[in-house]
Image 1 (cartoon, rainbow, N blue to C red):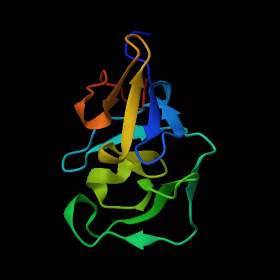
Image 2: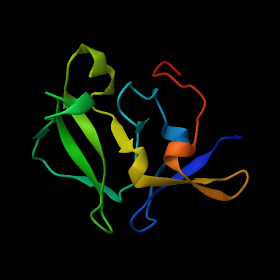
Image 3: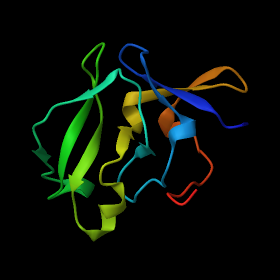
Length: 123
């Protein structure tokens, strides 16, 4: 596929996932890529965190980290309001913490500068 990409940790270049696992649109106020699956190099603690500001205000979530360098790379939403309910249980990568290797043109680019085609959970 034309827009295939591999997601890397911005701290150490460990592979965290790929664009074939993308499953949702970027929610308003959150700059994230949402995926069904990630590699085994993505870890999370059993302790829940509570959002104190911004789009995650009042939400409970698990923080995702890179196994290799420990950089916080995203979250798994545990509980939220109705507006973010569709993200619960999915892997959400912070765009400013990952880089994308675009397979077609063999380029590395910041995730915040990449526009992936629209996908929905139904697809």
